[in-house]
Amino acid sequence: MATTTLPSTEQVWTWLADVPDPEIPVISVTDLGIVRDVRIEDETVIVAVTPTYSGCPATSIIELDIETALARQGVEKVRIERRLSPSWTTDWIGDEAREKLRQYGIAPPDRAGASSAGTLRASRLGGGELTVACPRCGSTETEKVSQFGSTPCKAAYRCKSCLEPFDYFKCI
Amino acid sequence: MPSLPDMNATDVVDMARRAAEHQAPRDHHIHNEDLKPALFEWLCRMGDSSLILGHRVSEWCGHSPVLEEDIALANIALDLIGHTQMWLGLAGEVEGKGRDADALAYRRDAADFRNFLLVEKQNGDIGSTLMRQFLFDAWHIERLRGLKGSSSERVAEIATKAFKEVSYHVDRSADLVIRLGDGTDESHRRMQKALDSHWTYANEMFTDDGLDEAVAEAGIAMRPSGLKPAWDALVDEVLAEATLTRPQNDFARRGGKTGERHTEHLGHILAEMQFLQRAYPDASW
Ligand SMILES: [Zn+2]
Image (cartoon, rainbow over all chains, first blue to last red; front, side, top):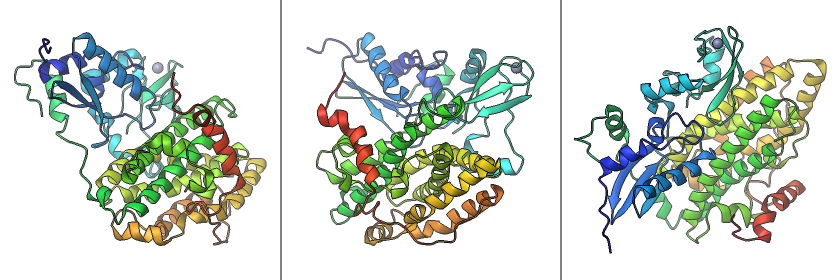
């Protein structure tokens, strides 16, 4: 029966590096840092995935895309495990992926921002409002339109220099 | 943990390294028979308040006064429904009768719901919706902050995840309460009216009962009354900036979190929310 040879976990990681995020197709699910573990048990490839936002509708699409991608590589048995901790943070988005986001027109998350969750109001009252550079023209003359944007992970901003609206990948 | 000795792509190696060797935490509370009934009901309290508020907030989708608000409210509703899946999912696991989050959300009747009365109140105008949101968010953030250190690892991991999202919720609702409270005469009047209307409902969030006691003794969650000082501090600060007057009334409307006496509104919410699953059980498409 089992004529297909099982892939190595290393091989699975490289395949996953080609699975695009359904909403931001320029970065992959591994770029996003949401694949937490790959292991093989009893001929089943188990991929542990952590959600970005709890209610993100893309989570189940991502899981389906992973299953489909592995099936296309001939992997017969795949199981997706949802893992909550450690909880996902935008700090897991690598530098290369940040550059891809910027070129795609999305301002990447602030490096220092993730740890400040829970003190947002306090930091703003202290004058610490975040400076977000426009992904098109690079200007830091930008303003927040809304903390909540087109998807759960993004905020809506506007550039006062080139006048274009843009998405900012907000920190959690 | 997969070792990746022969891989060249440094980012992939780095990713694998960061992918912690971490299984779902073992949690002795989940299998404690004595604690089970209280823990199940307490988890339903957390999940039901998120579910009902999430549903209420989602009613604004397509009806908000401005596009940005419409998007924000829809996103907040999504977060709350996401939290519901985690809380009720764990509740079903603890109960051990094969009910998952969907079964608990869609196939219980009003008397089995354990949400605060505050969250089942009708939306009213956008000011009333935002004031209710702020009073809840201010409770929610303190609740989750404490739960991050829960003796139950499963509770702690849900709280850690939700806390980050709720910090955005409270940031926004506080901001809007200030803008509308300290806005025009009309917006000020409406916000004060909303505050007065929600106040005795909000007080339910700080009532303790025997179930809270059992869960607190197990180190799972702080007694609700213990959340009051931090809530007071944030609420007082925001109301002062919003030029709104804090009601001097400590009376708490009760019956939501115990399920003893919900308002008539809950049945209407459930009729809409549960219709499909009741009419076509386990429907899929
Ligand atoms: Zn620009």
